[in-house]
Image (cartoon, rainbow, N blue to C red; front, side, top):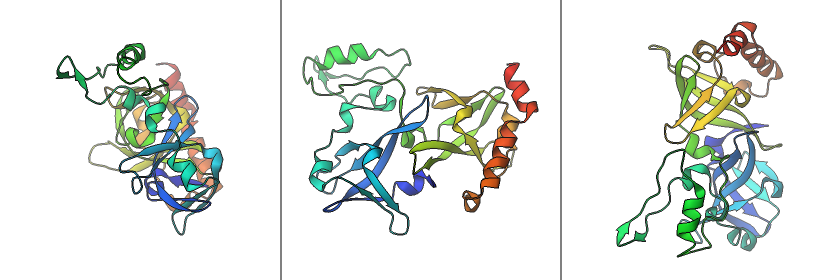
Length: 248
């Protein structure tokens, strides 16, 4: 079953012994678009505290009550690793200010930023922070509104993501197209996505702009229709567009 992340952000998390917090984000591996971590905001217990749980602990999703049931106790969720222990790229490049020689110190946002520098600096003051840097770990919430750059120019921007709630794989990005005065919403399969630039706030797709802007319009009510997905696959697999991408 596919679910939009914009809807998922409203889901409450219910442990085996009661409710605790809401889903705040999903962290994915940008090579396979698999959800690695579900980010839970337990702020009603600990203000602003974000913790990480694995998709494997999810028992079910109740769409009617916007609730996700997990096989953990409320205490286990509250004590789960914090987001600082395994931050996505956006947080790796945006370290909180701290006192350094009497002045606020911020790490550069360039793609060439070396995690080793941050580790060396932080080990002097707080070795428990940012234990694991992963250059492929992305925040779906952060990627919202990133631009989509086709091989021949801007194709639009990300409006949302569609995730399979059974396999916890990201399937599509919902793109608001940029085609003259026309503004349409279309689905772009994640296997068409390539490099991601944090500093440029852009995701690159190795297909022409027209393939995206003229794709079948996004129809949320038809997501459960297998024919609709077959039509989408057929559109992006058309030889006209595949040939242009190959000749890039």
